[in-house]
Length: 307
Image (cartoon, rainbow, N blue to C red; front, side, top):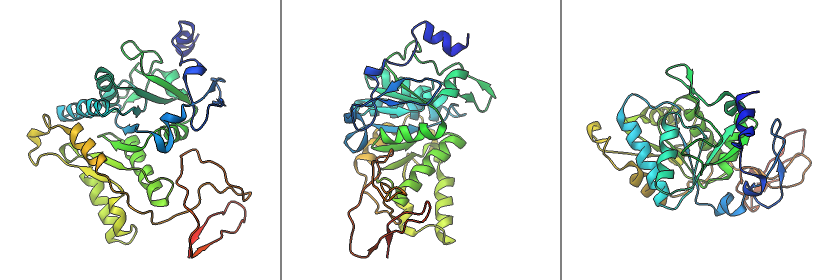
């Protein structure tokens, strides 16, 4: 019997279908095999009406205590601001710290994990090349986490996105980089207009800011699109970063967010058969305006284009 199967035998499975709800309506939608169960999402906790925030972060803790302190500060602040924390579902590294602190502060936490990682027991501790047994479905001390199991990494990101009104990046590795940049790209393309913030502990995210500015200088990124991601800054002296209130600074930046108009806008509800339907990422839907040109249906190429 696999480790995952034994968890289910002991009653450590996901919440029953009536307690796990899916976006937009109360209908049950099938989740990809091998779970073969129906899950739905509470419409009040998803889409444009939610105050939930997704936090992208590492499954390692990093070398500086300031990274751990920032994760604790953010988890506490999210809970105190009456927001649901949506994260990658693990208990290792920064992920475990931010989620654990949110729970301790009385907050609600939703973990979204792909089946393969749950079956393996958790994400790998990247800097130590070992798997941490910290992605249990009913882990002791984290029984209140609502775990959502998906089939793939792509589904994981889509599920986190549709449950959130904003995205926050703490320090992390390749996975965190990719997640942050993907939601920034979605902002540029008009898929959503949700805030994207990165918590710049020990100037961790400075290379990203320079990369964006390099893209602007070299003609690959529009100048105004530098503001699609905001950097939450701390004291100039790194010695103060361990005691700085990163959580408050991040919540302040989120509450003061001003939307940047998308530079590329497509109708993400339009399908190749010419019909419109809801989008899994809660895509922005813009009314047609003067100057819009109908996209032609040729194979997969369907869009509105700005004339």
